[in-house]
Length: 368
Ligand code: AMP
Ligand code: MG
Image (cartoon, rainbow, N blue to C red; front, side, top):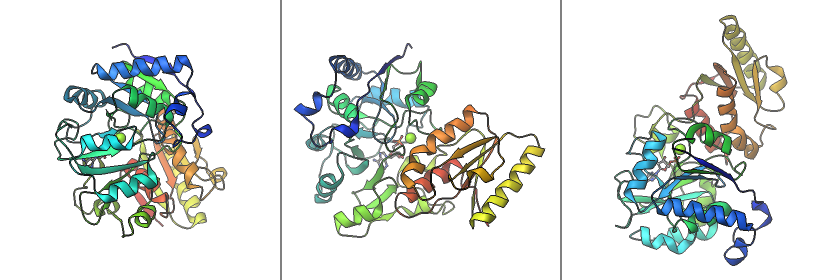
């Protein structure tokens, strides 16, 4: 298949996402609008288009067309029991795809939509089981990225989209990674530059009481608890790697985000971590392996690895999250075989960073 690759570069920061509608349309050139209309037609005709969002790139198809969902699974090589998130571009669109909109969903939408929050709700008959991986529930998100919104509207309002990577690889945060994985497999790729956040949305399940976070993200448990005025916990299966419990978001059980070599997280006091990683690097080098390290600006200079990647200033969670997937991908590009990462604190957005890093490392963490 010939994949059309097009560029739309707008400044998402220059327009507040809530001031959309008529005004939002003006930030696009006529050429941009024509591209987005064309992308929308592809979706309406049952095709697939990768598009930018504020989290990661999505691989979009018509959420209400079972054949489109089957194509998404095929393009990604994704197991068909792993449901897709349905993306909408206005709150009221939620009513068609759900059988019930609880008060909690309205509260969370008022607080965090458009934005990086996905809600699990009971599905309506309008959503085919192919889209929900056979479940009676549907995952819904209203992204804040303006290209994403305009595209969803052009596509008819309901775009099923998992991350636009081959199943198991790190989610793409730049179009070049979408091209690496999807060129020749889908109809179109919209290059909208680097994604703002760089980690997937928080998923909260509102079909159970109390609500539960199935995947941590930029919207933290504390932020959700504040709005809902009740304690929101994370699905235990996600926090405890060896719990033997099945995660409630089917996708969380698969190996994910993984670079091609092996990644090990080393946690402990700063000097101990530096010494331990360097000891391992020396050993790997002696055995002929190409090595890599993920560390903060403050310590990166102390490591002797072939590929050094900074996660930003220590404690800057936003930068660390933003860089994580492109670092994991660049290890592959630079043929690193043995990689080590410093650990991240678990507070706030850190829970999401550590969740993805642990999955990328196949849960290999050494505490010293
Ligand atoms: P992706 O956006 O590619 O990372 O995948 C979407 C994630 O949402 C996967 O981890 C799915 O398992 C999860 N998900 C989607 N729909 C549901 C649902 N109805 N119930 C629970 N988890 C879901
Ligand atoms: Mg994914």
